[in-house]
Image 1 (cartoon, helix red, strand yellow):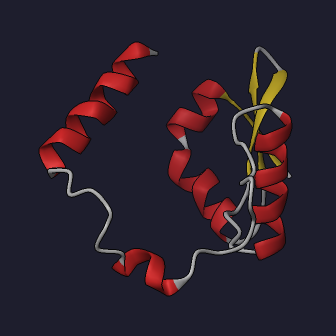
Image 2: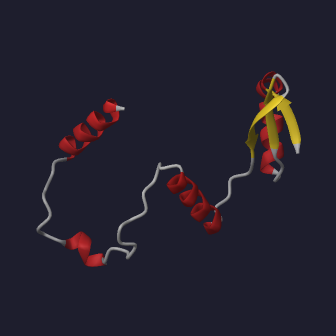
Amino acid sequence: MKTANIAELKNGLSKYLAEVKRGGQVLVSERNVPFAKIVPFSYDEDDYDAEERELIARGKLRPPADPTPLSDDFWDDEDRPDVPLETVLRIIREERDED
């Protein structure tokens, strides 16, 4: 594993990212104290499940009350409300601004 202080990382970012692309890892330090690690991105399903579990443990994600997948006909339901896109976007922006 390679290590780099912030200044080294800034100056040689391409070199360090090339190392990660080859499967390596880079430990990032500030004043010689490690605080981050750059690792290759993984599409492994197990990693995704582990990430979900971590988010749940941290209270950032809540598991579904019913883990059963929605049926295909759920999306065909004609009884669902027809909410204009502008309204949906406005509500999302308002909720984001509350934080």
